[in-house]
Length: 124
Image (cartoon, rainbow, N blue to C red; front, side, top):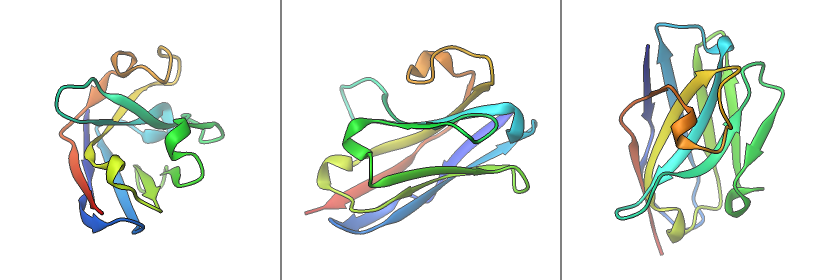
C-alpha cells in the first residue's frame, strides 16, 4: 500500500490550494483518510479526516470553514481543498490512511499507511 500527498506550493495569504492524496494497493473505499501537518520541532498536528464511507468528516478548529476534505472512490484518491490560507498554515502536509475500524482518527499513531508530505508555504 502506498499513500502519497501532492499539490503543495508557495502562495500568498488568502489564496487557495488543493492537495491530493493518491492511494495504491488497496481500495480507498475501505480506508479512513486523515490529513496532518508538521512544522519543525512539533508533532504531527491533526487537520482533517474523512471516514471510509465518506459520510463523516471532522476538522481541527483552526481550519474549520476554510478547509474541505473529500474522497473519490472511482479515482482512488482523497483531496484537501484549502482556502483563505494564512501564514500559520505553513507546514508539511501529510495524508495518512487506516482501516475503517482503526484507532481514533485524530491521532497520527492510529494510521497505518502514510507517505512523504508536501510543503505548503503561505506568505504574508
